[in-house]
Length: 371
Image 1 (spheres, rainbow, N blue to C red):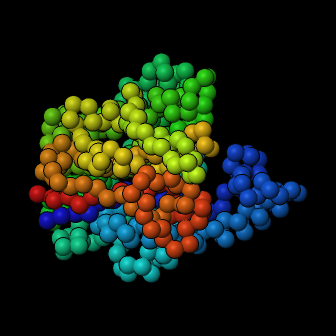
Image 2 (image 1 turned 180 degrees about the vertical axis):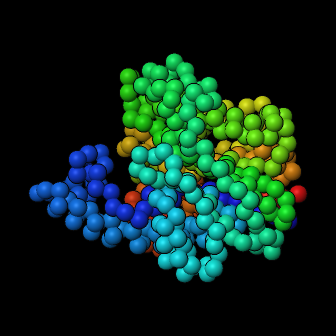
Image 3 (image 1 turned 135 degrees about the vertical axis):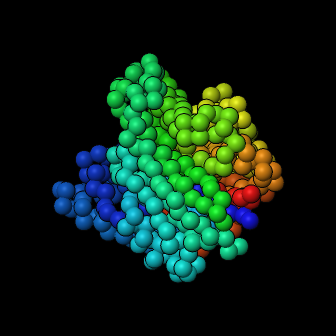
């Protein structure tokens, strides 16, 4: 009996317009920055037209990427709300795969833009085993003080003990697959912030992600009665951790040939979760150069490929699935993404140089035996 489980940051699946760019240039789309805008009413009209023009192609590509996973359960990030998810599923996914992800779950989290984590499930696996929803628990309310996770590094960022730990949520779903219990923890950790105080953005925001990772681990340990007992249960942490343990640094230019160098990071919030064999990053079963789920660039001087999207299986579940190697769907990546040799894939129709695209992230999917 097997289950196909996927995680995917769908990049701003919204059912409302974001007009914050009128007052904050950092939020203004680059296309609108080319125009002289008279007032806020003019800006709103232009932003609506821009968003609508881009959305249809983008969401067709998002749906194609999801369909390519053939997942029974999808853990999603950057979803506005259930209404947006239903509209997307009916208007796009349904046209590709028919009746599929009937069950949808989400909860309002802490993100200032209102983007949340969500889960879509089929009523049964591809092999006909029922998938039953048992319960859902949001942990968005937890504070640093609640779990005694406040520290000096957080204080230096202006974060108080009573502030909420999760920048979005840690959404806990208990399900049964063919009658066997399984728990999903769907997360979306704090994004890497702009550079500050002489530190790069990843380092500057690291204390928050370290606390989020510690909180997720604490939640799991308390749920199952300690680290040892928890590692023997059947669960998976799914989502965008906005952090990496390694990356592939890209140098050179197209006309002379690109160079790809794998680099290990000395510090990562992912280590907090995997320490002591508590869980396993299943994507690390892939070759070192072929684990990336996102292409990052700030121009020719800063380019790399890295894994931000994770399926972290409990020790017991990973050991019961020694040959389970995740697939990474990259056909929705824009043409600007630089692929290492022999990794390039055919793109979905209408993918652009930068946009439209399925997402800036790639879906990750794995087939697990639930025994």
